[in-house]
Image (cartoon, rainbow, N blue to C red; front, side, top):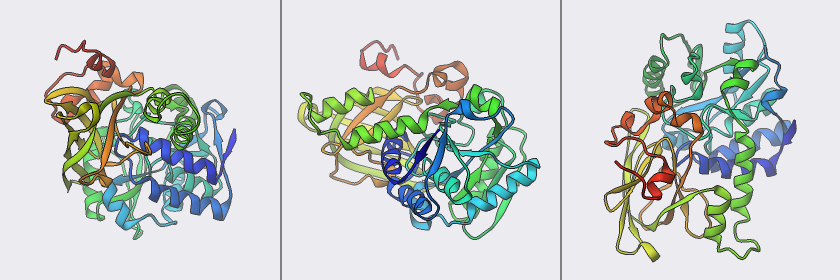
Length: 365
């Protein structure tokens, strides 16, 4: 148990935006939402999953939709209370704590804001260990846990509870409602008891985000390593490519940010060209037509000078970026995990090969 205040929020937002792999929304917007709530209501208590009673109800809070739309619409202060009331009335019991469903600049912050405003603790765990674009893409789905009852509310006050036959149906139906509500909404889903949380969640994600954020903030402080070497060391990242963004092809379709980025190499990568494909999150990275990384491993773009992560909605011509690969949570490399979030699910014509094997030249596809 420990407290999350303003300084912790700064680092969590920064680190979570790296783990968001390009998605999860603008960390600046998320940070403002969380900080505003903490300034008004005080710090939030962060609990280790082992501190949660087995029968306690833990509820994720998140936004659904295109991050670019969220940046324009923003998040009000009443959505959290509506979600709380909908879920607690459905179960007939009080919510014990909130949790993030994924890591990302916004979705790591909304549970902090909700916890502060409603006086509840937050759990140091999520359902991904990174960010993914669709609702069914969580560790709980692999465990056979239903996404529903799922509560959804928009900033105007429209709300609905879903009960669906599969988590894929939850994604289909909720995505349609999200589009009708303007492209972004607030949701609660995968509401679980403490015993299930301890067994199937990705633990320690908030703490990891905070440590990464602090390390990024201090990346240029006293060391014999270059800032780039230090960044790769503490992030346990694999260098993929460094270059200048030559073109960004982006569209908002079906409440997703879709597109690809073309990057012209600089420095040791001069003369080469890289391409990164994304659907909210970065899905694949290739250099001169050779794939170097795919989902479920994380593909992250960071500024070459500050090493601050660059989200897909902030990409622009001329920006210099370093593309880095991070290993995903081990469960995503299982057969069940790859069925949910492997490259072929997203239409990428390759089998999954672990990032470290591709970089090491051991890939056979």
